[in-house]
Length: 520
Image 1 (tube, rainbow, N blue to C red):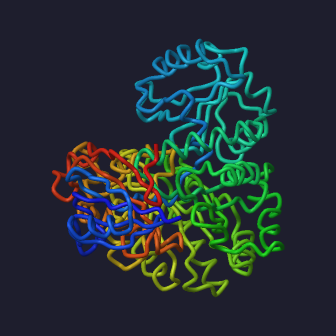
Image 2 (spheres, rainbow, N blue to C red):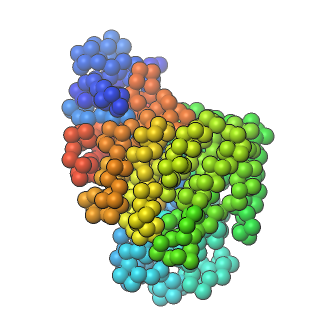
């Protein structure tokens, strides 16, 4: 049976780059069958005995594609304590007390604090948390998701020794794994389902799920089997269990080996769920000063960050994943880490294979040229510009030009896509577009004044969030409204191409359609 809908009375941008738009389009069995005038599409719809949907003169864009987020973490934090924009440790304690007094869960989770915003200008400690909650374990993660503070009960349950309760990188990962291990598959399914529905309501029609583990993949596949996935998902798995000894990054590569043995290659699956490849965590974050730099941090000269993985281990993983025909996504924030990543691909002689580097927060001009020469893709998170408002203090004015060079990456011809790293950043795509276009200009962020030439225009920003996302996830059929393409689109309350940049973040998605059907 054919499912036919004619969408009329709109201004639909099918080709973002060339600003090609039309006032109506026909969807047959989830794909764009034709575009044209209201009269043409109405006649075609009637001849096929389909339904007509009047979009009320609204703006239509291809659905947004988030190339990099943690769906499981997002699902957890949707139902946890929101600590974004917390102004002091005293405020954090008050929020924790209010949340804990109402929560019936065995663990208390919170996310989003940033010590740079605290009046006290210090990190919270276990003593701060113990003053509020002693009976249940408490885990409050920093906004970057590379550090957290635990109360005494959480330290006891995880077996971690820390005089302050602060854990970073491998110890934080250990805490997360212990918590996830406590979840049942049905709980995992609820976490993922909540996140997927939340994302689709915001206008996201495809998500790059990075750092997915075997348990979450099992839950995701169960949702897929039951027809409960509400937005398209492209999965980048952990290669194996992360090592807790600090001697290397991964204790084993069981997941990578299993994919290889089963013959599961990039783009395995259907239009709704595909396994793409693996994600490798090569360093930390600027916020926690764990991103690996070639020179020390300007605001803490005894620190230079560190790699999470050694060159030889990274080389072996890259070679193994390439041999298995899986797409590789490597987290690289510090410039020393990016040096190592580029050296690794060159040493492995892997060129033009569609592999990705994630974040690229400190990127020198020579890096950009090498990325282009090797054929690597860029998955960037524009809202870091605003969240990392202290970045010039961290790195110094002499390195300001290397911080989040969006325009340089895109203009050099490197395939570029946007992500949020959610829940590190808010998932709302318009916050991301706003950051890419303004670089924090209206928040008086120093980086905006220092690097105004790195701002993208609205057309390029939306392209990176639509067709750009499809391209770097090796799925060029999504992210545009061409004939024969999936009918994934959003209906907006304003035209972003005619909106004052300072108000871009206020644009709202009124409806989201995936495969021509509205997500409700």
